[in-house]
Length: 66
Image (cartoon, rainbow, N blue to C red; front, side, top):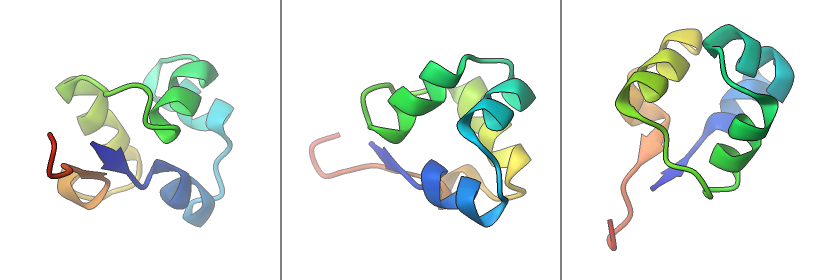
């Protein structure tokens, strides 16, 4: 799975820390998701989508091997 979290953060002018605080996770969790080293839970993915006012499918993408 890949994602556009970093792109969306830039569009919304949010730091990793600010996004982390909004969804109640650590900055390291945001960093790991952006590096595609951590796949978020459904709840976490929905919280991120809500912050960016977009559907989950506009932020997270399945890859062929998924």
